[in-house]
Amino acid sequence: MGFPVFDENAHLFGQGYLTTVVLSAGALALSLVIGTVVASARVWGGPIVQSFSRAYVEFFRNTPLLVQLLFIAVLLAPRNLNVTREPIVAALIGLSIYTGAYVTEVVRSGILSVDPRQIEAARSLGLSQVEALRFVVLPQAVRTVIPPLGNLSIALVKNTAIASGIAATELLKVAGIIESRTGLFTPYIAVLVAYWTLTLPLAWVVSRLERRLAFAR
Amino acid sequence: MKRIATMLGLALALAACTSGPGGGSPAGPAGGSPTPLIVEGVSTPQSIKDKGKLTCGVKFDVVGFGFRNPTNSQIEGFDADICREIAKELGVEAELIEAVSANRIPFLNERRADLIISTFTINDERKTQIDFSRPYYIAGQSILAKIDNTEINSIEDLNGKNVCSAEGSTSETNVREKAPEAELVLFKTYTEAGQALNDGRCDAVSTDDVILFGLIDAYPDTELKGEPFTTEEYGIGMKKGSTELKALVDQVLADMEEDGRFAQLWEKNIGEYTTKEPELPPAP
Image (cartoon, rainbow over all chains, first blue to last red; front, side, top):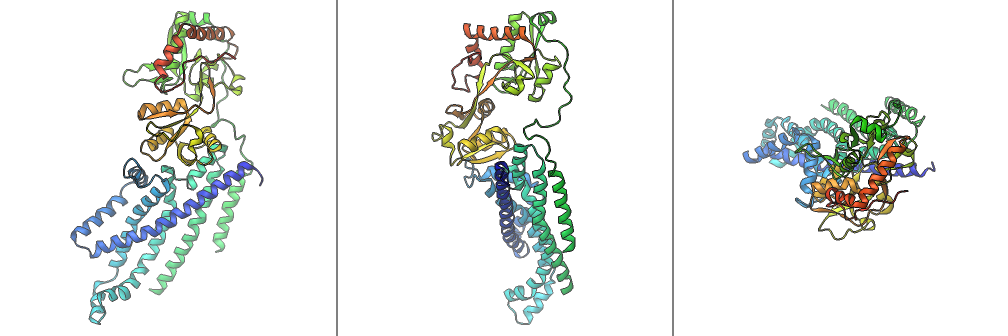
């Protein structure tokens, strides 16, 4: 189409889509790291480490994401900690910490799903502690963990919309801008479909994995 | 896989249906307004004297122009004081009622207000529906930044800076046009934009100077930078056909300019926010 207004808005929409994808992928990677580290600390750490990781999980799972994002954006602003002024960076950090709390619980349940007597058995067969974790616990834990992690990543994609509340120019914000420019509500339909193009393949992968892992068990 | 394809098809069909008929004029006002109710007749100086009071619709939330002081509930501001001066001229009491933007023309047509003095921009579309006095203030889009920020002195200086505004506003479009390299951070409201300026997430906020006055009030370490780069004339609205009233209002404005009351009220209400000299814009 040759309408300049359409071209400009389509360009903006594309930018928003890309931002949502980057935000989702980045926060997923970071939250997996956070979740694995904190879950390990929670299971194998000393009592102080355990209570800190527990406090982290309970705090970030039980407060609203929008409030967390606003708090982080203001906390990191030049006037305060002077880390970043970019809403997308604040959103990436906030979403990672928030999702990380959920990942922690998933990974923890994965670790606990393997009977500790299996480690003892592996150890008595001559495997080291690390080998026992690597070859006995991990393969079984992954099976328990993959389906809920898939669901968390779907939730994460949807949660990126909340980043519009701190003025990150992702899909929802872009829809708002185009709506107020044109007076049309169609951008919101486009945005719903756009989110769906991200979550639907994820949902499909999750259900396939669930079936395969159930069979293997 | 087949199921997914069906669902996608359904969604696209839905999107196509709703976007197809391409709803209405993009420039039209948001929200459906009820059928305009127009009460017969117009206010005249005589009818106002008979009634014993002059009813003005003003804003209650615009610092400097029409603002309800939360400590004593008095309506303060340039618009409110102009209403009081006109009432004084007529020898009646001034009654101030709140007129938000969407109410302004209905209040005149329903004759709930004799005058609308409510940061009311004169434009051609409105002129077909109501009458305006001569302009009494020229508003314009300006730039607000921290006082200690010496890098920003004009719209061109916004290139490469983080600029906060509200999404979809004319202000946003103006910045995009005049400072294409500016990084726009768009919030829902100017209150949020002001907070972002305060904690350093943006270098400047740009919108009508009159909105910025409110932010200066909240954040005293900020000031307007450079001259406004757009112009909007504020006028006093009256019901269509108010020839006598318009003549009187224009005369009061001219008299106020003449004897210094205009400058005095300007200084009192908006002098601390703007660097502009008190001046009654020329009558068209």
